[in-house]
Length: 250
Image 1 (spheres, rainbow, N blue to C red):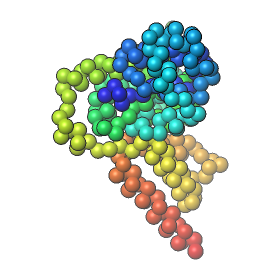
Image 2 (spheres, rainbow, N blue to C red):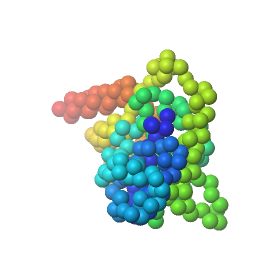
Image 3 (cartoon, helix red, strand yellow):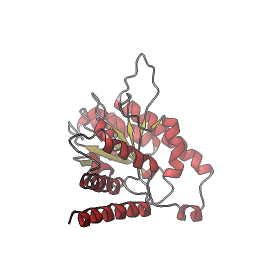
Image 4 (spheres, rainbow, N blue to C red):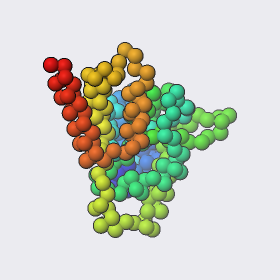
């Protein structure tokens, strides 16, 4: 299970924080680290020092330019959020997230991406809306600011507890074989592009007056946890709708 969990850091500005995150991950048995457009050097003397023996994770970390690249194959993306948003999204505590991981990671194709934002501003609304759910650490309201590595440590700890619990009740191979394969983040993003294009074609959606329509539809489909076969059906419906609209326009 732990091999199917990825830590994603966006726009990190201090190499020491990347090193400290690597240490936190290695403490809890996580090894998949992806860095999105870091604003600092990844491997420095300070990052190696703060990694405290986990610097191999710094050398193996993948550096990409966009969140989409970092989570393209993810079947569940969870964004860390320290504040409420104008459009409510499914919100989990780290303990609740841990409780979902056994089922989420059961299939061989499963990939869970835990996404953390910039030290100074966290994740943007657009980045959070690309996640199935948000995780919030219930800190002291009078002093809620958490260091990046501390936040990763808390969430990674719950991942490890979930893994330890899973060792006591591991599913049989036949159970794992029957798990439906979920659509990946990349497949979902292609669907959302297709959906918006179709809705514009049939005059249901006006991009100049969006009314949060696409954000609300995104939330709906992400909450539904669409399977690959279902995604094929949904894409087929959109294609047929576009064809019918084109035939009618002739």
